[in-house]
Length: 130
Image (tube, rainbow, N blue to C red):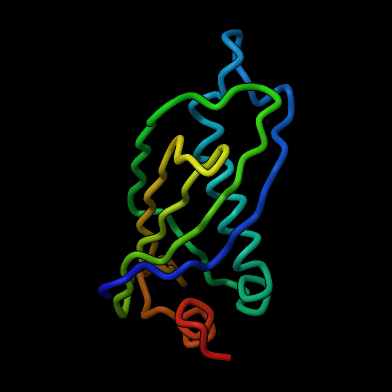
């Protein structure tokens, strides 16, 4: 896949408990919010396929600058790569149109404890086919 595809774009207001004593968004919250964005994007498909799981194969966080309390965060979820059995998503964390962090996650679909081909329902969602 050559170009990334924007899948999801939402602005959120983090809670006060998402921040550390230095007023920075905690490190683990970047991954948590990335998971939430992914779940929000896929929630209808996940519930239609009982027994199938989206499993993280790898995750990488690139912190560029801190996000402070009271800053709204614009989360953008992109599809970077897509194969028959895995896909790579990028979650960008933007404040005032500036990228503060990026989370890159490689996912696989699992059923009965085995990696399976990405189901058509998910493939269609990822590629924009209705």
